[in-house]
Image (cartoon, rainbow, N blue to C red; front, side, top):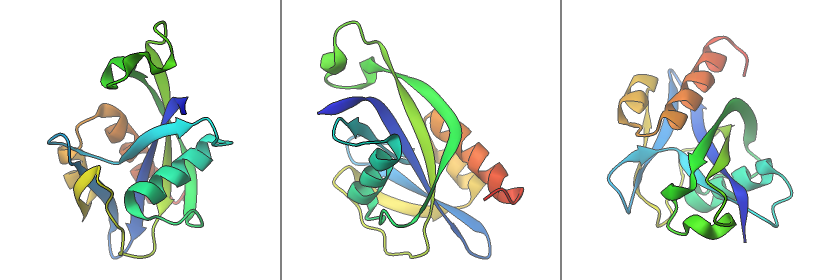
Length: 148
């Protein structure tokens, strides 16, 4: 059963330049990071982030996940089953995580048609949602400042 929150996972890798992995949705024509709902059986939001990263991209739970400060509220109108959490629930929180990926062999779930490893500027141009852009900015700054 769906928990009352979402997670956002930003895969990145360090090479000659830092690259971010963005995903094109299969049901809509836009790019995003890994996004998904928590499940009531997940014991933490980090557990949800690791599960979603594995389900949508084959990222192993043992990879280095870091919780970001970026959070946002998402309108329940964005979900096909808007009343999943009750008719009075209008927004749910979204928690953001970065994950450092050391291999290039990510896989795609049916939710996405393609993934691309891109530079910060390309990701910022392609991403649709502000929550994705703010989380990317935070992650990029932390990497440039040596905080991760």
